[in-house]
Image 1 (cartoon, rainbow, N blue to C red):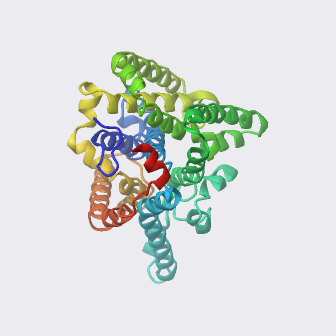
Image 2: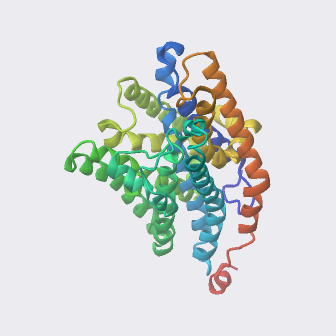
Image 3: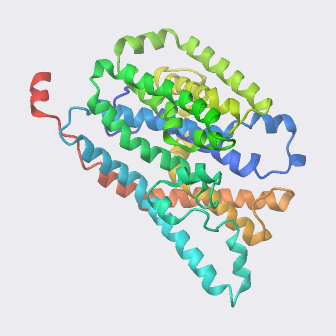
Length: 395
């Protein structure tokens, strides 16, 4: 399988995206809202790491975009094309979702006097973070500052803010750093992230350090940069050959990391805890990097078979829409049927959650087919142009 694919989708990456969004859905649709009486404690514990699906997204994002930037570093229009394509992928759906939220809130305020029933839909739609922060992708800073996820319509967008801020830094790092020194620069910032999280944990009063360690881009860039480092290393023939020879060793390392993370989770050292802040997020990044390396390197094997599953790949293709929509749809469905926030306590509430999941998948598919895909394809009409001097040197 070729790692460098300029236009063609990489099946294995879509499968990994499918795994990532599946984890997010399990966390928000099952582990979080379900009553403890309805799920065996052991199963609840085993699913306790599904909140980290976003960390897999970080690693994948760093891998894909880092690889694109590395391949096109000498292009004369590197920054222009990179940001046009990123804007086409992220902004249209995101800003449309913000507009829809503003319209819904306006309608609720206008008709609530005559139809008090509409107040039910105001659940978790209050403004604790101004829309201006969401528009400028600075909501993660406000969330860290206030220890507040904001309204649930946009709660998950903290990770988009982290990625958008990362997109401002990564092109500069790759463009300004000589290729020979790039692994060391990436490794430096990868190690700096847990050091910064630990520093903030001890310097800021609790829980400030924990929240800054979770929400801020400099503290979470180890996942993103590990993905970029994987992209760089897998473009080295000798490293690829080494990985092919040591694929079982990579499996073993991933198994050890997963075991450590599960033990941490069973001990209550999950998201936004001291242990996760100090080193847990980095262990997650290493674990998901191992999965990524295995998925794109081995020709046959258990993980490869999983990530090449067509259903999982299709879920990965629409994962951005699913991620944007899923919490808001869950809130609205439960507000409509039960006049309450999402909680699975009995069979009807479980069916409502399944219905919300169905609506989310359908809406994300429609969004991709009839809205997002054409904009993304237009963005890919912008091509990277190689510097003529570099081109002559290469030929």
